[in-house]
Length: 536
Image 1: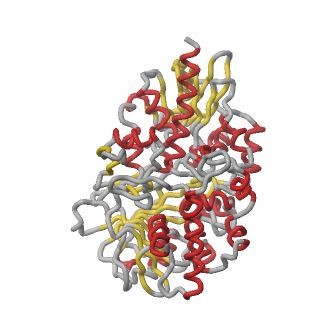
Image 2: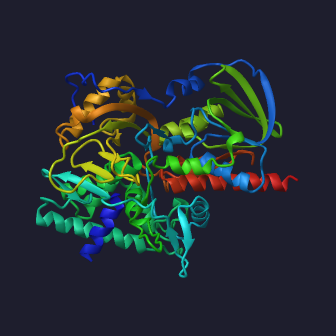
Image 3: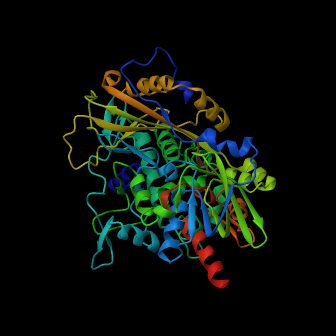
């Protein structure tokens, strides 16, 4: 994806405001607004519940079936701990890596790829080897990646100055002086990739908590990426657009609000290499990261409880009591357990714990970006000149992030229809305003907005679309604004309660990427295992 463009360029160098709703979407375009269950989730905030109708006992309860919760469950299962349940509000586990499908192919509803992992992430690499993403280890100790899962060429393109260019770093029609500035910026980012702090740690690492605490780098968390770029003399509009695109893509936030530390981490944290892959390569599937969460669930079927709305977590002597509503039946149930992992966003955790101090701390410091993701079934799209249809297709200057061709990774490429997944982080207004407006728009409104954007690059898109399904993620990911990563708040929110209630979620890392969710789950599960073993 964009990291590939960044590295290849480096090596070679060695809103709503913009869209207006006009006429109605054509009648031939079917579809609807699907998931996530925001209205059901709001019941935790808005309703009071009676006493549970049933009580059962478990050693461990995991609340939240996203990457962190499933990762924790997988490790517990591997270590022989079987008496646990994973509760999740939605009908399908996976969090923002959930996926859908139709007769053409599977398609992502959120996260859709993983970069080549850093080689020091042993548990993560073992997981990928267990599920066949890594097919072996060569004589040099380098992973050999499954060629079917490495993103096929052509990988990405950008529509800019009236033409599709290969890669996402702007170069077509860019003035020479601005090209030089872009080159200098990319060289500087690459130098950060190799820097270490006085403590011997990588300046920018994954997970973020393994990064250097050297103040020379952590001070970058006190200012925004845009402000830092300007202070360094980077003024090119093309460069600022590109960096803003990158931060919106990974963090769901503009570079004017993302911390400089997080912005540089985006470019400098990837260091992995394989026998047949470089650190700019990506791994992807038609289902996106939905394929990975399916792998995380293997062996856990009898422990997964979807449609379970947790309404309360409380300490009761040596136990933790979890009350949850069976959404299908409307009945309230209680699980009494020894250990609990809360693998949900922190604004939800505070409500479930009935902890006003925690809730206020999150409300005062955290911002969660709403997203709109749409999956379109299309056939016969007209193309502008330049680079051909790629896996990732981005439009310069658009409020959207463009679209991913979900059918790009199919072995059988002669398909009459395509599924394309269109991404739009709603960043042109405050998060609360954007969230409110997103909930007010109809399916037809969204279809019109998507058509208006894609018509710039596919003139016949209106006729080419057969179906548009839309998902609104009200709180898709936390924004790594200044002070989130190195300001001390994460340490407060990560702290376990009485060695019985533990927390795991990407918002505790400040960066919403698959590896962070995976390791958040592992860390919480290890805490649980240590406490259960020590109590024997």
